[in-house]
Structure formats: C-alpha cells, structure tokens
Length: 424
Length: 205
Image 1 (cartoon, rainbow over the protein chains, first blue to last red):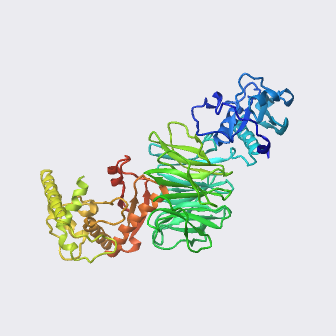
Image 2: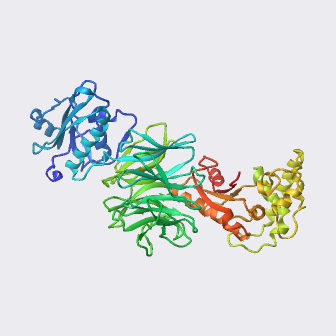
Image 3: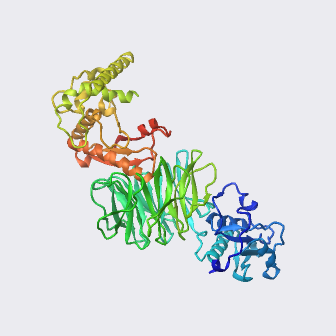
C-alpha cells in the first residue's frame, strides 16, 4: 500500500491552505496532531475560459480536508505543472509532499469541458491514477468529488465517499423542507415541503428512495418516496404513532416503530407496506432500530433497564442484549457499513455528544465537543460520521472523523438544519 | 394561567364524585394534602372572583349543581349552564380543558386531572361518534425519535386512564408529536415543563 512506502519526514506546515478556507459556507476545524496524515500537493489545474466556479482543486481540497486523512502541502511560490514531464519531484519532496495532483481544464465546443487530472507518487515518481472527463458545466462539482474519491482511494486504500449524498430537514419559520444535497452540503434540492415537521429521513440502500416520518396527517406516519419521480406511499400508517424507520441492507424490508399494540415497539414490514411482523415485546419503550450491515442484527434504544440504553437482538428474534453501559442516556444507534463501529448519542454532564464504540473491543470514545448533538450516521466508507448539533441557537450539520480530530461544518449559515442522514 | 386554575377549581366541585372511583391503574391515586387543598381553595376563590368581575355566567355550574351521584355526564353540566354552544367549548366545563402536564421524567397522570378526564370520558360515552386524539409531547432535550416515544408514553397513560373510565378503544387514539410541537421554544426548566404534556383534540374540531 502507498502508506507503507510514504515515510518521509512530515515537516509540512499548512494544514489548511488559504485558498481552502476562503469559502464562508464551510468551516473545517482540525484538532490535535497530524502525525499520520498523508501530505498531498494539490496543484491548481490550468483553467479554461468560462469554466464554472469555484475551481475544481478547491472542491477537491475541501473534500480531502474534511476527511481528516490528509494535509495539504502549500503550493504557493511554485511552478504549476500540468503534465507529468513538468513535475520537478525534488521540489515537491522538499515541501514534504508524498503525492501530487496535477491537471487542466480545456474548453470544448458546445459549452462542455475536458477535465484531465493525474495523481503522482512523489517518492516513487510514478503515476498512481490519471483520468479525463468530458463534462457539462452541471457536472462540475460531481467531477471534483470523483477526483477526490480517486485520490482518497489510491492514497488510503479505502474508497472515498465524496460522491455520495446526504438528506436532512431544514426548518424556516413554520416551513419544513426535506432536502437532498451532495456529501459536502452543497447543491441542495428540496424533495418534500410541508407545514408540519418531517423527521428521520434515510436513503434506501440503492439510493433511489427516501423513507421518512411526516406529521402532515396530524400524527407521525412513515412514507417512502421515490427520488426519481417524487411519487410516494404510506408504508406505516397504523393507529397510534408510526416512526423511526430503518431500511434493511437488502432494501426489501424496513424496521419501524409502531404503537398499535401498546407502547412503542419495533416491527418489520416490507417496503411496500405488506407483511407486518412484530419484533420486540413487553411494555417497554423500544425505538430507533438500526440494522447491522449483514442484516442479521438490530440495534435499538430502549428504557427496559430503567434508563435509555442501546441493545441489540437477532432480527430472527430472541432476547435483547445490552450494548451500552456507561452513562444514563445512550440513544440513536447506527452501525458503520464495515460493521466495526457503533455511533450513538450519549449524555454526560448534561451534554449530548456523538460517541463511538468499537464493537470488537467495546471501547468507547467521545467524538465531539458540542452539547446538543443528534442523529449520527456513517459515511458509506465508514470513515466519518455526519451529525446535527446546535450552534448559536441554530441547528447545523457537521462531520467528524473517527478519531474525533477533524470536524467540519457543512450547512450554510442562516438556515436551521437537522435530522441528517448519509446515503449512497 | 387561567386554563390551569379551572381544573383545580373543579377538583373541589367534583370531589364527591371522584371519591367513588376505585384506585386506577394509571391515574396516580394521591390524596390531596392540606396545602394542596388550601391552594386549590385559594385558586378557586380567585377564579370565581375573576369570573364574577368579568360578569360571566360561566361560573354558575361550578357550585356543584348538576353533578350528582357517581356518574359524571358532560351533558348535565351543559344543562346547568347558560352556555348553549358545543359543550366541549363551554369555558365553564371541564371539557374545555385540553392539557395535561407531566412532571420531569414522569408518565403518571396526576390526580388533579381526574375530574377533567372523567368529563371527557362521559362526553365520549354519551357521544359514540365522537373521537378523541391524545397528542403526547416531550421537551426538546435528547433525540427526536426517543422523545417521540416519550410523548407516546404520556399519551398512552391518558388513554389508559380513559379506558378505565369506560371509554372504548374505538373512540380514542394515542399519538405523539415528540418535540415537534413545542408550546414554549425556550430552553428553561419552565419551558420544558409546559412542553411535557398531552393535548386532547377531538377529531371533528
């Protein structure tokens, strides 16, 4: 792997180069040392007249920075090579770079662009990846995210998640909008508008649909909506409350919380609303089901032990086992797609924060330093957690790396965002 | 705050009635302490003074007329009043009271709400086509989904109390709004207290 050979002294300074912090809508905070970050020189691509803004390398740089896995090598005061033959490796080695990204944008007839980039190993002086894309201006940001994904995967060995999407709810006055945006919070599109609250959105595993809870019927009802044509149907609208939907990894079934029989209990139901079966039993409060990636285990929050704690049980049935033990309030479980981690919200000293448990060892770690965190969900590559919190009295969205050292704020200022969920 | 005074006043007016009820599973059976009684008496006096100065005829049924024996009938209260509209909207009737507040981390319906719930139970039993929605609510602290379940727990407690009073399951529905319908959007203990409640809403209203 690339990491094994990249053991150059890491004396590079710039964690965030000036050009990356220029955008007001995104804030990236880095805490602690950067000892195991990969030093990448992201050379501004040669531009074409009339190309969209912002520059591709800025979008790529924001993506890489937000992941917390990289540090950006200062590229000011250097020649900006476009072709590999123009790269003076000694200069970049001297700057501490382990890898360098170069590229160019060419204008094509009909308003299209040709985007070419190469990722080069500074140590081995070889090309790690090289692609060209013939794109429309509308594909500008998507192209940057794809470049970031390739750089990320080649340098870390793990696929990137920059081309994925997130869903969240925005509240403005008494209006609620369910939105789908790119993983960096940009390019938001509204898919539901309502005068009543919408909560708990979650993408289907194929990314084609959203399940969510809407209060438009004067009570919580679970809807599944196609993102392709906007059509939707009620999947769970039983007597009482219907909430906390979670897609099974096969996309065929959902776990939902219903109160039709007694207290809030977890049920399984087919995505078309048929085949209801009850999973948890007893007079306790059971909610917030979350599937393990193999679909065999369900994690959920329950007050069966006296305080809200996270439990797990086999989807085929059986006795629930308690998973969280420290603290008196642990809720909102979510399992990383690689099955290694549980993220949840824990309360300590009156503060609600994102916590991470390594399932194999049971070791836990607090990832955030805020006080009103909610709704954690993992990136599709399991490498960071998206969550909602409150800053200056307003709901905002953020991501945090699994070591808790890199936190980024995604949402624009001036809007109240909540209930985020990371999708494919 | 007047809304809160009415049920307390009715505790006095209807005390003969509530004493005939057995201990019920979900209604806290707590005998009022001397201080509670004194408080209620003062509150009652204040309320009647206020009503008198306002020149409202609404206070007339509150002397206990029209409440006889062990069965409380919403219609009878209406007859004792000069109010001619929908009995559920008669400000002098306990049917006009639609909020039940809960203590922190509690899902027990307090004794003070028994007369008001008995009035709603009587109304439902004498109006078989009426449907009552019990909307549970929670304060803003913690997870939205978990708070939805907590609000449901409160709504269920009220539904069970009504069931004990004879209300059929077909006539009511316990649902929850969790923290989605905060009465007070503040972050103080006071705000949290008014947000921990169940709202009683008739389907036809």
